[in-house]
Length: 283
Image 1 (cartoon, rainbow, N blue to C red):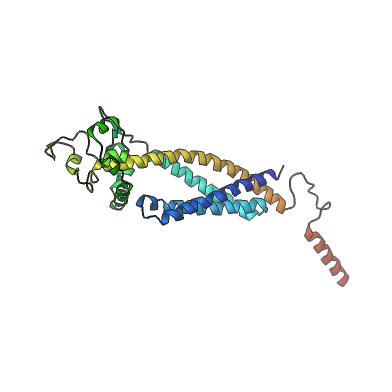
Image 2 (image 1 turned 120 degrees about the horizontal axis):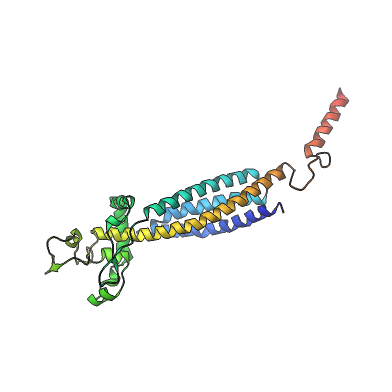
């Protein structure tokens, strides 16, 4: 039974080793795409794929060939990966705690406000470099084109995504006369323009819609991270057993066998005995 942990960690790391190939392939495929939304995920996917590949390779070699040094590196990398994933999960759950949107009377869709999100997310979306990439992603997704031909009845009966609600229409509370916003209204009412290349892309509600989409995706990812953490901790525990078995195999004292060197001498015992006999013959 002492080999069970080595066999198990070998099979588990073989599965994760094979699983890293489509992750790396997906990152390389996204590198060829011109869409901003996809290229933004390229670097994280490639880094994750190569980290999983190297860690799984070290664990597979160490467990299958009883290499304690490879298993030691594997356990160290796994510990760092678990700590980083735990910190990322806690941070993700903390910054995605707000948001969710507010209901609109008589409408199915929700509307979103920047004030409902965490300060970190608001500062992040306020950065010019991030918002340019996010806005290019919104325009490239053609989310507004999908509702361009909606009638007023459609807006009463049909739902909208966060991007469509924040970027493709003015806030529902806005009042217009001859295409001009009335006084004392939300600033987004004045930023709205019916031109297809303007719409409400400059509105705070559009930034809030982007943050809501990010919040939803990040929240789902954080919940998935919890499951992955449990899986990694289980693999780490099995890896510790495999490392102990590899150390025993290296010292030729595996569990369940006689530890007396006179019963089963080590290879260097015969070499030392030959050298001692030769020395006695000379002197």
